[in-house]
Image (cartoon, rainbow, N blue to C red; front, top):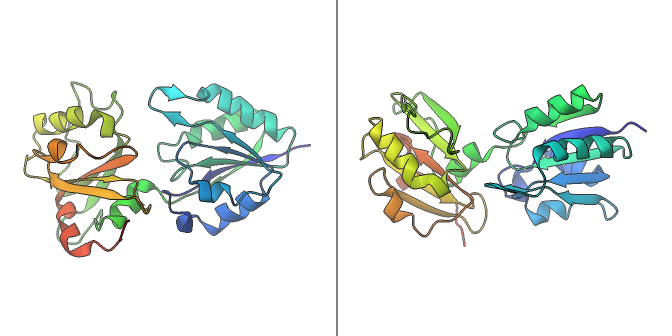
Length: 244
């Protein structure tokens, strides 16, 4: 038996933001290997006999090392037809989907990559923040808040003129990230937002500036993302999503 692995993006959290293809594959899956932020409502779409395996990662706490996840996918591909590797957001945006695809390819396992809506795009939209807006900016950048990125020699040429910056997985290092941005020349009055549980009924958001965002966001918890740039100020007129 030769199974196929579908590296599938589950979107940012709201089950309505699943793609049609992702939902169809979840319905068909014999095995679903899923990450930490997958909504339970999405998992309930699986057929009753499907095998569900949790391999979530949180900071330095990993249920399984990445190498074991890779091997797990190969092992199930030898015993089952349809394996869905379900990842939050998009599998190729800080989702290690590329690493898993390379491992599957190296081991002769058929696979497909099913794009998902990245939280980097969807969550700001649910907070009324366009990542680009004519007359304000011309580009946006998505980076990880991982410690190795915001090191002492981090160069915040990171925020080019007229650019919006989206930082994923950075809340637990917020102090260091903000200090690094300010140290590298960003204006302390630059608009900044932090959004928790974006696209979900429990979504919370804080709007401030770089010099006040740390104090203003003490009540915000992970998962959350950070948005920095002039387009953040547009939320005043563009907020539309009603959370609980």
